[in-house]
Image 1 (cartoon, rainbow, N blue to C red):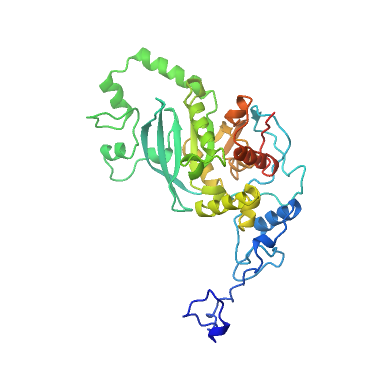
Image 2 (image 1 turned 60 degrees about the vertical axis):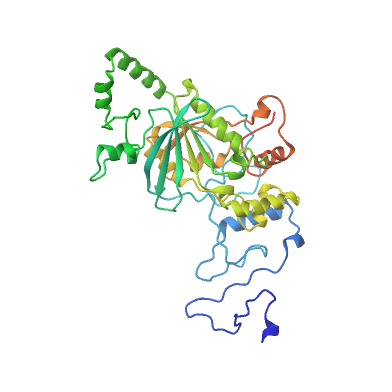
Length: 389
């Protein structure tokens, strides 16, 4: 019997062991090597459609899957993948009136968006002074979909979390201050989280309070800037030039720190590598060194080209009081985000899209060869609304 075992089989493996009752036999993966495949643009598009619409449940295989796709893999659908790919300039554009469907390419089913927003709760926030001299408040969120700690980086004092400020049974004023549910600033000896104590102890003059109120009302007339940012360890921490993620995060923070900006929020989602994780992302990097672009590499690894979801971001924005018709200004070049972030019932309204133009392009230059290839793929295959001209 041992001579019939594959080379990688465990010595303790018994090939003729009966399949457990109630479970189908495990489908066998394809035997072809990636290097044997010849994928032109049409085949890659078909492969992406298969990874976003395939459905394998309870052992039922879908015969339409290409041979490169594992029959046991059911990737999540990417919300908002079918927005128009019309050429637009890099200036701000209105968020209204977007048509559905993808122009200039094959059209498939409508994007699968979340039917109901997940439950989110801000469990703590803290003031973070930055190296640039600005301050922001870092909020940590828990949710009912995963065990990750997603973040909201809030600039300005007028954006507050409802779930954080809500009273909790049995907590003291000190408990509230420790978890960040306070108004104003903390200081040694403070005993209350309430604004009334601040006014009483610090002796806020009526004239100063009125001036501050007028300034706050003026800033509220400007919809706040919002950036939905997915975690990128390589671009933010180890200085990778394969992407522009670190630059976009820094630029979003800079814009929100400007006095005339009215503040803003960076929603930082823990979905590394467009949702495939860091280990798979590094495999994709190796495929890029072998001649594939970032879009093709995900497909060759049997992942969707973009496996991210934005339901959590929408729910976090609603918790921060940014839902409803007051609207937001969304910092993005990605048309998928514009549609997906509004939620299933338009809980958040994107009043304006603000383009994220690479810093090198602003100066009339080009970035490194690798980042330029990355930006080119974003424009050509992910249909990002960005032009080097």
